[in-house]
Image 1 (tube, one colour):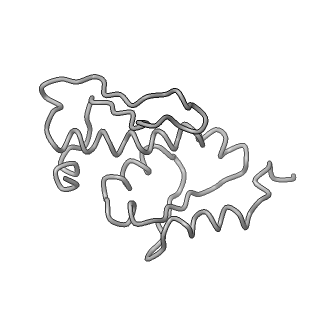
Image 2: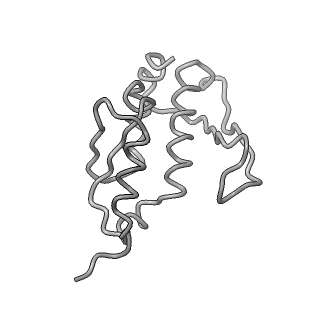
Length: 125
């Protein structure tokens, strides 16, 4: 699946993967839109699903908010990113900041880093 998606650099297909809603939008249901016969391959569907996952995260932490908080890079961790090159590409596409991906760390590592830096407010001048 990932290899097929890697061959599709773009897709018009849109997947919103919020089957059970989301914390900030509990009534939001999953959806698939912009379906065309040219976007029904395994590669297009997998690319659209990866993009939808990242767009969901991006909707909760948009670039503008990160910029206001003084965030100057994004660190990705977890097995989903380490095993899925397409997911990495979509993270790079969604977040216009320098990105680094943790090696041999799981998602709990990223959560711990955030908790260590509780002062995510604006930087003092």
